Image (cartoon, rainbow, N blue to C red; front, side):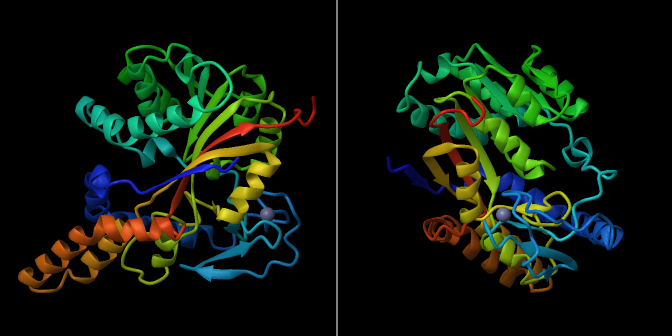
Length: 346
Ligand SMILES: [Zn+2]
């Protein structure tokens, strides 16, 4: 079966978030520089690939923004040479600020409802009950945006899990009902313990310290169980981060993201999970990053010239991003995949 591929999503959907990144650039950049210094030489060298678990003996390091990375010779996964120290987990409660009710509703509508609509369409073409009647579990539900989209669409059997207590509380408050719970013992165990028919995980899997164990847990699920997920991918945005040190690294900073998929490692990821891709949506915000990079470069231009630069970048954003998406060089992939064949341990 040839997976259905969709390209592109309007930049207007996330323009507010991108403008905020520009306003907060100096602050994020200073923090990343501090962290790069702090992490320098800390953490154990990775012996095995964070994605496919192959030995990394043959992988020579390359440097970007003061941090060493490795490219897995087996699967093409990009990862920091040193595994992040276990005693310094990312504090997502600190990374993600509180949102007003209006901001919450706006993100659900602009960002999460389109993801759900796309996933429902892809899942409707797979075997099983109508997608909204299936049992859903979102891994890493964060603020609860996707849970809200599910509820609004009419789903009744759905839950979310998150490792951050503060986010769980925020999600339940925003939803007005207890749909989010604190994950206990990691996401691989959560998948093993769950009877869900659809698992969702948006920009979560790249944060797992033990991805191979998570893939093994997925491979143990019964045939037909579906996975709807998105991950960041090494693309134009990642390379732009090496073209200028004026803008902070949104894509691969070696800290919040210490590993990055490529299309090749994503293919290996699905093989190891014994999943077949049924749909993908290729879009990103690489060109918004380019705009941020150019806006910072133009900061010292006379205002009239700066407005010209800003205007041109805004006019070209969607067409340029479409070209990046169609070249499969954008910074993210959204995937719907289904477990195929007998469970690995079943
Ligand atoms: Zn690998």
